[in-house]
Image 1 (cartoon, rainbow, N blue to C red):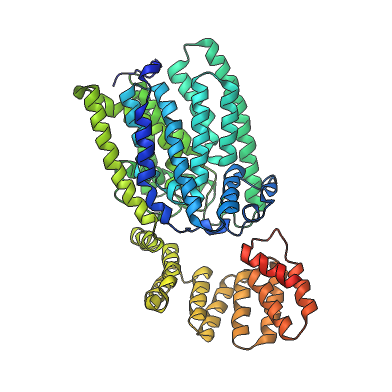
Image 2 (image 1 turned 90 degrees about the horizontal axis):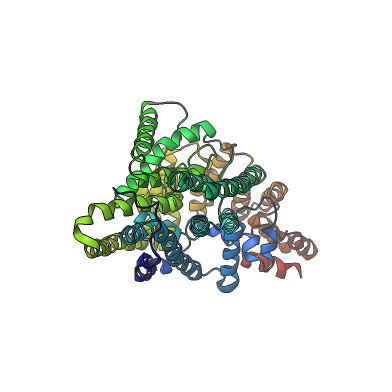
Length: 550
């Protein structure tokens, strides 16, 4: 594999019509997601004051708020289209098309045209890249990658202040871009270090960027410490830094397998148990990882393109190292690393297709784009249907509880026709994790919706015994008592819930109903006025309290 990347391609050799083709294909293959509903964490956006309130962006300035640029786009979506998911998905697809142009501007500067075209197809149309297009909450990853690519382009051109500024924007979109300066310094060392003056400027820029990265990391640690249930941080019960790091030895190989064979095993919810102590498979995974890195470094002596494999691992490091996240693996975490890995693929694709000539390689790349686009189209169709998405997750993780709970919720739309299947899913989840309070609580919700309050109360009581301090369970018990006509007990339960969580909508709203039933309108209005604007209420819930406060 000839090492041609050190010499910048001539301007006339840079990508032209190719990027328009790839951007158009991206819009086409991800278009099924325009009909997709919200999924999973997407719903949290609709109750976030920073998203739903007109002055929401002011809240993004608080130190505990992370990803302010991403949330600013969510705020804009909500102000324009409210809770309609179409606009959110439309913006995600538009961002993917914009990413094609940003990536093309980088690849055109680093590789000959055939290799750059193949790299662009790989990066934009690979099915592993579909999650940030289809999952609204995944936009933060795509946005951070967009700014990281702009920073990379400015770095190549020697526009150091601009590179630092774009990097800062990437961090404000999502913290996973933190290792970009290490990646760029590595690129400089491998490909450009002969230029002494340039190397000196690059060192200064990378040090400044590292300072920004450290500041962002400290802010993230602070946010994880002060935010209840952030899904990240050193206090996660499932694992600690060491256990999380050990687990990532397996996760990296999962990602690489999905890169090589994306048609097998993709899912929204991978089942990767956290490693609590060393075992044979973990040791094997890490030894194989060390061999992979060692082989790449050795190959870099003659073929510098193998740096793009090492670079991908550097870009993956923020989410696959010591800082624990609630989920060991998530496909969207490979989005930015794929920007580097694509260059290795492009170089290899162009090299092995060299006998075909430039036109032959171009034709082969177009064929590749059709094949990858077809796979991404099928992936988009799965994401466009909540039931299909979670059925797939149950198949891929048959012993994991969360996919079963999510599928049971998705089946609510079928009404009584799916009641038997929902019951079976919940029973299976309970058999898998009998000590999980969330499962017991979901069982209570199922019985309550089905008009079986006695069985619902039994399930909620079981959930409370497993998690006595959870206010949502307390509120569910009080709601069940209210439906059973045990009003005094329900009132006490609602008041106890509000003492623990003043933002619990059900407790506040139902307590207001009890007060009104006694003609105590003044107390009900007072309770409505006390609802804090900082609470995570939907727009409909906020309006209900505003009307009740008058």
